Length: 268
Ligand code: IPD
Ligand code: CA
Ligand code: CA
Ligand code: CA
Image (cartoon, rainbow, N blue to C red; front, side, top):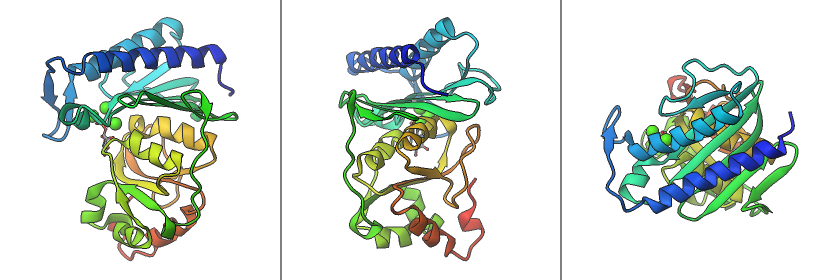
């Protein structure tokens, strides 16, 4: 399915409106609630951005399905037809504690296949998008990534807990690389791979709204996003994710599979 030009333009307009609102209200008092624990937060702005995007989609595309983090989308979406996958604020902890390093993520899928992905780096006013069959853009200019030649000459991004517990041979991967960086917002960590600043991003547990935008952009640029054992991602499931430059994907899979512990490599 090729991306409809009007749908693309609308998505960009809505994302820009949402990013403007987040910047304009950045210094306003914020209601913050814990979800499962102190690291897992939701603010009224997560809900307000989600509500705004969903209202727009429902108005223009009432037959499309929506999967969204804070629960205002469809209760049991499936992959039939168009599916919009939304993370209204990716990096809510950063949004609350840093007022920086957070993003808005949107992936558009048709019959389970990526059509387009959008990541707004809100504070840098950068809109990244990838359209499958077309290409990848930063603020509407074609993106020219930094070249990645090998793991040994590259930085990597990854969830810190992976390295603490050495899941997926994370320390071994790190030892092969030049060092590790991490934003704590999956969309922005994926942007580092998209830009060629890092060879890979590895996370033990991402929800569909954390990876759907990135997966569409990676598909548009023929980069690899799989589970850490090389399996395709399930669009409706929480799972471990390896987002990787194609030049290093098979080497990283070999390192991960060299582990002897089955539990260490569980993708779920
Ligand atoms: C979180 C961030 C974080 C990742 C978590 C996500 P949220 O998203 O992307 O980097 O490690 O797994 O839940 O909750 O801030 O949208
Ligand atoms: Ca969250
Ligand atoms: Ca979120
Ligand atoms: Ca997220």
